[in-house]
Amino acid sequence: MRVLQIHTHYREPGGEDAVVRAECDLLRSAGHDVVEWRRHNPDGALAAAVALLGAPWNPVRAHEAARAAAESAADVVHVHNLWFATSPAALRSVRRATAAPIVMTLHNYRLTCANGLLQRDGNPCELCVGSSPWPAVRYRCYHDSRAKSAVAAATIALNQRLGTWTDNVDRFLTLTEFARGRMIASGLPAAKIHVKPNFVADPGIRPHPPSASRDILFVGRLAAEKGVATLLEAWRLAALDDLRLIIVGGGPLETELRRGACPGVEFRGTVPSDEVRLLMLSARALAFPSEWYEGMPMTLLEAYAAGLPVIASDLGAMSEIVAPLGRSWLVPPADPTAWAESLSALPSATPLDAAGTAARRIWEARYSPARGLEQLLEAYALTA
Image (cartoon, rainbow, N blue to C red; front, side, top):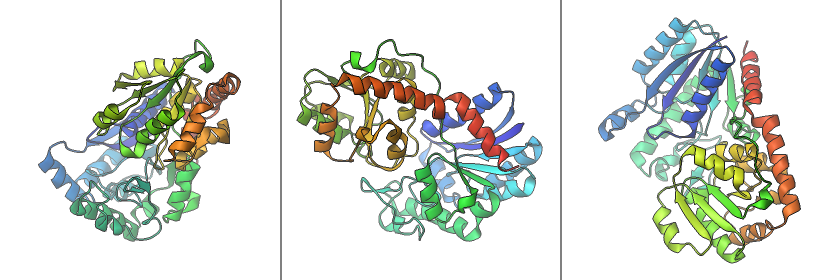
């Protein structure tokens, strides 16, 4: 099978870029041919501003994508990110240039939300789901700018009106059932939306069960929506003298969080992925206190692969991903007292090790590369 993979790289490389690369490598390793069409959102302020103005409809990029589609002789076109330097215009041009079916992965909520997160002022927000995107301008939802939010809202409104997504995409892939529900509520046809989660590589077998460790791990960006402040307050309330909280990651709140941290908390900053893998293979549990819906946090899948139990906020995608471990591993978001109670239960070894074993089995069944390849090819077959 030959796949044309279309993706616009973000200005700051992140998880979505890594997922696109991983899918490309996975298909090639299975003997499939992948043609990569890549564009990059520009770094410079002026260049980025100019590119952003074309976000609603960029005929130049649309023409380039159409030429790539015509020349690729692909059996399927798989579209990932079009924001913002490519624009949804590429979908219509690709549709006209090739008879190959078009599959589009929705890594976030940008087809209905200006910032793609369904979040406002640090809280989940669905004000624009199934209605108009224009409230984003009033609330400065994209980069805290009315002008930039207007461009983002215009992109959504214009392409909803033109039917760009519904008329030119044969199959949408969401990462979770939760995201599928939100996209159906936003107006996409349910029959076209298929759930295909991400996958992560095997980090290897744990040298010791989770109960042998005293380290609770947080891995993520130190930003308000990630709930790190809630976790640190919960740690102070729980007073777990026998355990240690390791914070991995950097971000805008790092200095403030370091300054206010209590004893038993260790900040590691940003560390290489290999080191994160080793930390997961040797930790007691992963704390994931995020306070927004999330898409599909790769950190959770990596923890499962490492046989690491996860305590997560009972919200959005996290509820769906962590529920198979048992409802006791889900905690109300932004509630330090509830989080302190859950953290205090971690010294119990038997359920902890059982959860670690269950996590590994869930990874094997749902999030391994082998399963990821099966799901990807199943999604392509649905469009044939």
